[in-house]
Length: 233
Image 1 (spheres, helix red, strand yellow):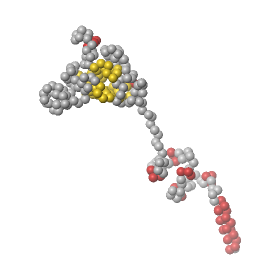
Image 2: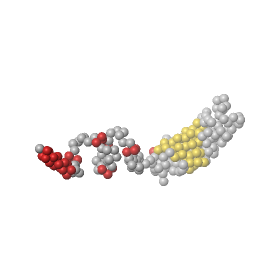
Image 3: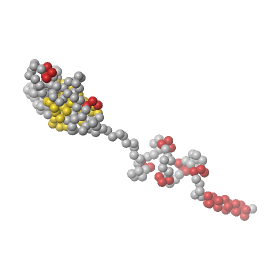
């Protein structure tokens, strides 16, 4: 009996050893092997067939940075490349000259008077405005303008340039109104020669009471073109 049992054990062991290394995925029931059955760091990337793991095979937050070798962290999906020139800007001084910009702007007319006062209503529409060539068709862009702080010029000769004078409209260095739009015949008419097209924008600075600025009350302003500027030459 003892000899028979020993022979059976040897035979069984020999069969197991012979079968070692021949177990395939078909021999393992689905979900029968758990993470506790795999020794830490025993599985390598080369042991997993490309494409065999999907996102639904990985539990949320189960993978950490330490689970990846240096330089092997998967890259996230790259967003679309933004169009060229998004968010262009220019700083225009009190004379209507560009003193700084991100590129592509030029002045077509700065505070022009196209006709003697009272002689030409159409021409006088240009008085008090600055006309800027944006170097692109602006029909798919937004246009913004803002008065820039200028606290080193005493515009009303009251000796106060810190913006703290108490009376109404007593701080012209800090105050003012401004509007901007794309030149578009029939909607926003731009009178200076060459400005009446959608490559141009007009900026209209005004005093805080709405009156037209003059040489001694004009201030700097920023103008910003937003949106798709990929059509710039």
